Length: 252
Image (cartoon, rainbow, N blue to C red; front, side):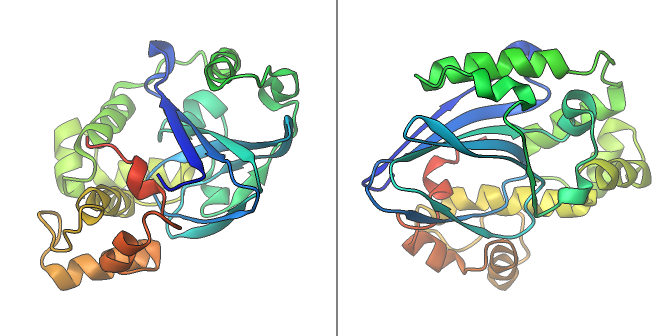
């Protein structure tokens, strides 16, 4: 983490573990705006930005399929909730394919944010989880969908689409129909996003030759550039500047 930044992460309670990956906080402690590039990480998000104790921005994002540039205001704190692929149906109860690579602005009344106590990250997460539990669908998550989410979460893209289908006993066509409906991409595209994101682990260490996932180095560079707009060497060079995710990603 570069000077002027602090970052924290909290895991969800058990009742939300199939729907929420994590909660995070990123604080720009500088007296100037911070220019960041956010790259695809395979999660949807709910985010709000606090400056001088007041919520200035509140939005939901669809799945990122390529990089997006952001500017964090001076002395602002970004709070986020990473959502898994089952969250649109079983938590938010809305399809999110329509905001693929895009935003949906939220009213402060959504999840009761306007009444949150913003005094600490831990307290914010407690309140956030309480509100998420209130809107969670009473439907039981069906077995094939739960197996799909758990397998993707566990393997982080280290499977082919055919292997995923075979392991969870759900046809590739049915999986693609489900993912396209709720998050806007096919299984193959989702796996590619996961693969690139996992490759950041080796990129941040200065290793630019793929250990797995890719046919050769040219294929690796091409896929990284497609999702991030930069080559692996440029990502490594700017991980303390624009690409802060490289510092925060954790091994599976």
